[in-house]
Structure formats: C-alpha cells, structure tokens
Image (cartoon, rainbow, N blue to C red):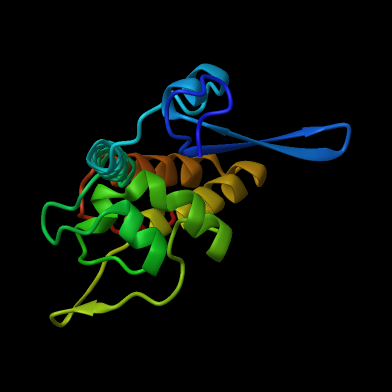
Length: 180
C-alpha cells in the first residue's frame, strides 16, 4: 500500500483520526507521518531509556542515603546506636546512650513516665548505698521552708548551709547538728 499523502513511498504508519465521532484511518509513510504527528518525530532508544532510568535510581538512592544519615542524628560512640534506631525499637544500646541522646530522650521520657527524674528504688552498688544528693537537697529545702515559716531562723541557717554544701558538688553530707 502506498502513502496516501505523497503517493511515492510504502505506507508503514496507520494514523487514526476521529472526526465528528467517526474514525478515519490514513496510511502514511515514515516521513509524512513525522510531518503530521508531533509524537512520531521522537525516536525511541531502549539503551538511552535504560541509562536514564538507572541514573535516576542511583541519584535517588544516594540522596535518600544522605538524608537517612543526616536524619539519624547523633551516634553513640560506644555501641553505635543512632537516635533513629532508638525511636524504632525504644531500646538503648548502652549506658553511654543516655548521655549522648539525653536532650532528645527527655520529651519522650516525660510523656511516658511523667518525669525525667527517677524517684523510685535506688540500686545498691558493691555493698555501698548510692547517695542521691538531689533527693537529700529536695528534702532539706522542704525542711528549710518549714523552719522559715515557723520562724526558727537558726535551724533555717543550718539547713541553708547544708544545702549549699551539697549543691557545691561535694559527695560528703554535713551531719545534722543537734539543736540547742
């Protein structure tokens, strides 16, 4: 069959046009079809298409890997746990993770436990009880407020000195002096 437009070459393309709801078929050669249809001008190369797809996949994968590494946040130098790994499993790898992720853990601990401070039982360490200075200071502050409200200023001064000493960083607790 010859091309219906140039009537010189063999028709190799069937172009279907719908006019007034009726389909009309036109048989054209490659050159005439390229003039009529803007889509037919594009040549298709399988190799170029595969190369383009692979390049895009590699770029996307490397970009995702970079964002994953940046989003994972700090990494514990001791065990290698990341903040992202903790958020997925809710398990820390070692005791040093508490120092590394401290600020990021606080909101979650507050939400789950109501506080970021442990107020329960205290474990014993090698036969010696663990001295919790913060608990002692809190109790002394309550006692100080009570002494001030009852106008026992001598006791309040002793308690104030004891609190200052404890907050100064010393592990040694000043023994309570007997009242006179």
